[in-house]
Image (cartoon, rainbow, N blue to C red; front, side, top):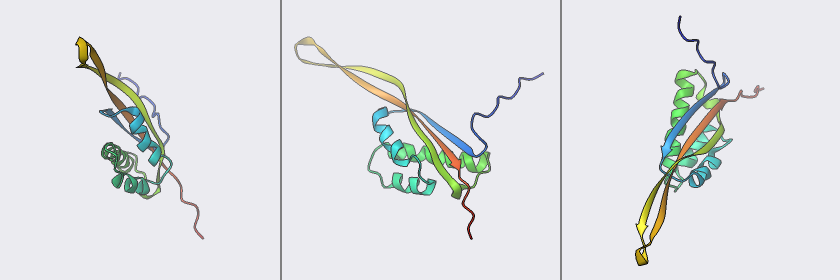
Amino acid sequence: MSKEKTPRALKDNEAKAVARMLRISPQKLNLLAQLIRGKKVERALAELEFSRKRAAFDVRKTLESAIANAENNHSLEVDDLVVAEAFVGKALVMKRFSPRARGRSGKIQKPFSHLTIVLREVAVAAQA
């Protein structure tokens, strides 16, 4: 008697990739998530490649992982994939202290983030 398999959380035409503990603030990472949300995969990859933001490398890597998951694990067609969801969550915040004048200390916060990208296969309209 083995444990029953848990049902799949995503639909059959979706694939997901998650990047955890990225050393960037959620606010900055969310700017890139907004940039790719709702776009075709090849367009999103192109925009991330030419983005000047530091986190673009991590977002691109996560998007490529989601594409590989869709292709290899779920047998989805890469050309029909769209970024259905791209959202950012807060992770832990490392707290550090910096010495200030008169024996006081200043608080330094170093936030971490989680990034989740969900791809959906969209059926191409019937071409005449």
